[in-house]
Length: 160
Image (tube, rainbow, N blue to C red; front, side):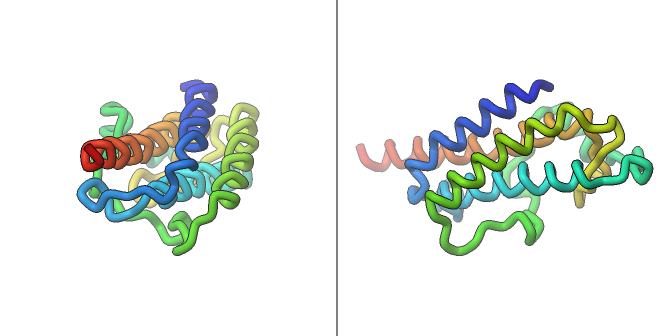
């Protein structure tokens, strides 16, 4: 899984900052800014965690659920709840989103030089090591980009 695909996904998030205040409760109870902010918090927090992990502590305990989602290549909607540390604040500014975009681009560049057993601990999937992290981040980001795109499609439908 290439870092280039993840960079493209981050660029797509950046492209949607202009639509940050749009929402549609039929698609998601959160607006586009929430989905962008959450996606970036996940990328940045995972990058920090994997960069500061001790590869000697890695356990190959990737769960069956994680394996199933990785084979499918996507996460279903509405099935998981985001941990508190990656929840967006109540007020999300364009400036904050732009700052997080810059940080995310910088952070993902660090993923290519890590020990193969550098990892982060996912609450449902167990330890996710260097090999799996780019795919996880891409799947997660694409999950939220699909929601963003559906919000925008619904907005166009409603405005006709």
